[in-house]
Length: 130
Image 1 (cartoon, one colour):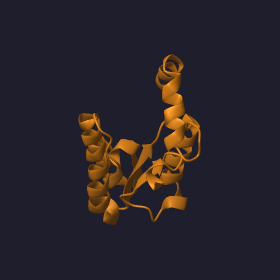
Image 2: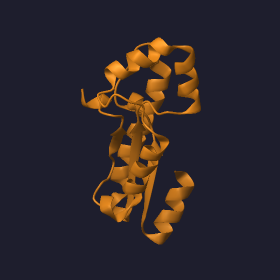
Image 3: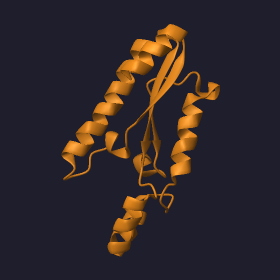
C-alpha cells in the first residue's frame, strides 16, 4: 500500500482493496499463523481506511471464502469427504468462483461504494453469517 498511497495522495483520491480471507474474520483451529496474518490484513485495512478517508482515499478488503481454484479442486479430488464436509458449513452449498471475488473488488473500487471505508467484505457464501 505504501506506493499506492503516495500516488493517491498526490492525485487526491483512490481506492485500495486488500485481500484477506474468511480466516481474517473468524478463527479455525490448527491454522493460527494463517489466521493471524489474515486478521492483520483486516486490521491494517481498518486503520488505513480511517487514516486516509479524509484525504479522499478509501481502503477496504475482500475476505474470500472457499473458492474454486486449482489448489482447492485438487485437494477435493483426492479427499472427496472434504468436499462433503465443506458443503455442510457453506450455507449457499457450493464453492465460490474467482469471478465473484473480482466482482466484489470492482464494486469496492467503484463510485457505487464511495461511502464504504475500512470494511472487510466477506464473499463466502454465508459462512461468516452463521
